[in-house]
Structures are given as structure tokens and as C-alpha cells.
Length: 216
DNA sequence: AACCGGATCGTCT
DNA sequence: GACGATCCGGTTG
Image 1 (cartoon, rainbow, N blue to C red):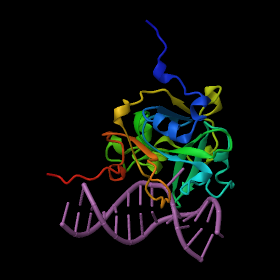
Image 2: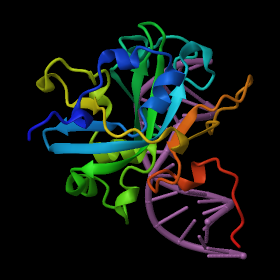
Image 3: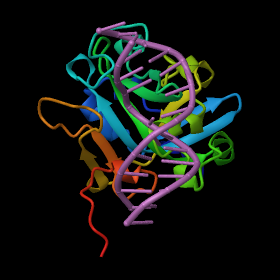
Image 4: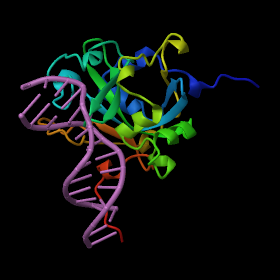
């Protein structure tokens, strides 16, 4: 009996047109599709991080609009890709109304389709769970670079963009964890801007910000 | 499992 | 001219 597979429904642009602290945890468990000429790779998102535009000292948009971060100031539902450490790309999904300049950094995911292609792009990964375990590993696995900066993740037609994010299977609310970001010397409240799925093996263990229990 | 240093360059001061 | 929204390999415990 043929029925619509709800989990494969693309998230509409409205999904991203909300405060970034709402969107970020809501992206967990969703399916990122990156359908490049080399082949499709799909990721179940397991770890994300919110960046709150000009109000956020850790955000690339903190000091206003530049050539690099222009996409963050634009329409929600587009992809912001930046290059860092001289060798890595990281990708965000732009959130909030035009001008808000907030975004969600995609930090980790589980490869659920296109595993062979992802392995080819990540030859040093020893286990499948390491393929997209980390923001730069994630972009490698799905084949994203700066040429895709600004691409639409809510295209009217699939042919208009390699990206879309499908409804997927969000985790039970009790499995969503949050904690402070690393690398941001923040004043202000210790807002838990990093979100991950508790216990998921694709989440970077040393960044989990869970008090380490001594082995016993 | 935890810690350390090297790699490498676009972007903004 | 300095510094990253990082990863990797080697070393130590």
C-alpha cells in the first residue's frame, strides 16, 4: 500500500525563519541531503551549534557584514560555507528573518546513504561513525566547499540546488542534550548553544561537554 | 583515553 | 601581520 514517506519530506523555508535557538535543536535527527554530481550523500544530523548573529561574540557576523559572511545576512534556509585553519570548510544553515544573520553550524552526523562515496572522501576514517564526526569532517564527507556558499537548502525544484533537509526522525526530547560552545570566550550568560543527541556514537566524545566520569 | 604540535591560508585589523 | 566555529598523527599513561 503506497503511502507518502513523511520522513522524506523537505523542511520548508518557514522552518528556518525562526529564532536560531529554536531551529538548532530542531535540526537534530533531520536528514541532510547533498546531491552533487559525484553522487548523493545523506546525513542524519546528530550535533549542531547555534550562532546568534551580531549579538553573539562568537559569530562571524558579530562585526557586521563582510564579503565572507554576506550569506548569513540573507534569506533563511540557505547554506553558509566558510574556510578556516587554512584547510577546512564548515557549513551552516542560515536562520531567522533576513538581516538576522544567525545560523546553525552542522557539527556532526551519521552517514545514512552514500557511505562508499563518503569513505572515498574520508580515507583516514577508521570507522563509519567517524566519517562526519566533526564540522570539517562533515563537509568533507558530503563534498561541500566554498563554491557552495549561498546555495539554497529549500529549492523549489531539486535541480535548483544540491541541498535539502528532510524531516527525518527527530530524537525523543529526553535524548537532546545541550552545553556551552567551545572556543568562545563569552561574557554574558552561559547559554547552551551546542546541541547533540545523547549517546550517539557520531558525536565527538571530547567535545560532548559532559563531566567526565572516571572509569571504575 | 588524553595531550601535544604541525599543517596551511583566507579574512579582517 | 595575526589568528582561527579544526583535523591528524604521534606519544604517553
